Amino acid sequence: MMEMKVLGCALLFPLQILFCLLRAIVRFFTRQKRRDLGTDVILITGGGRGIGRHLAKEFAKQGARKVILWGRTEKCLKDTCEEISMTGTECHYFVCDVGNREEVYQQAKVLREKVGDVTILVNNAAVVHGKSLMDSDDDALLKTQHINTLGQFWTTKAFLPRMLELCNGHVVCINSILSLSSIPGAIDYCTSKASSYAFMESLTLGLLDCPGVGCTTVLPFHTDTEMFQGMRVRFPKLFPPLNPEIVAERTVEAVRTNTAFVVLPWTMHFLVILKSLLPQSALEEIHKFSGSYTCMNTFKGRT
Image (cartoon, rainbow, N blue to C red):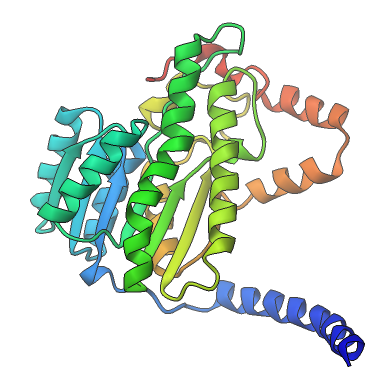
């Protein structure tokens, strides 16, 4: 009896995969039901500037009930908060270093008491030092891992339990295509983003049986913000930096349609496929030809 059941599952498995493929194709060509953000309280880490600032504006534009900003620089947080408030959306900010576990847990408690339960958590905070391993300061390397990777552990542990209780929540990670294809000169950033991607992949699978709670991981190409200022690719017209407004729009759209993984632009899918098929020597030639091998030589971004 058990053998027949196993055989039946094995025969059904290819049909299930085919069904999933067909459903994905249908989703791509049809308008999906979108989440109403009117009751959502959204927390964005690194929300004072860069992609985080544009995410705050886009969530407000799409009707979010409340937007909360976390970050390390109060002036940036205050300016963005005032801009969001002028649109009519309730907005609050708290100075918080997500790399500091105790500070995250303390500020999470304060946030819940003053604003309410967070239903959408956007892990966006990140830093990059733009140096090789041997040129990197040990403390700088640790700072990148604490903010870019471990910070997600602390924020998610702080807010996910309540989402599970309410059967209502979404965890978002603004990652990078560099988590799948690294470059020289940003070893701290690439390592932290690869770890972050693994974290989100595991979390997404772990929440499959949790109704009402989902995950979204966004993997953008180089985005035109001050964070990666000075980074240069060989063919900027062929591989132009992404507009942060577009990244924000696509992220909010992915949250509203409960899309698990988003690669920006879509052409980056080919890079992932090539990396799986080509030998290392060929990949090295691609890096050299595209300029990614030396793109961080002119890096002047902020840390």
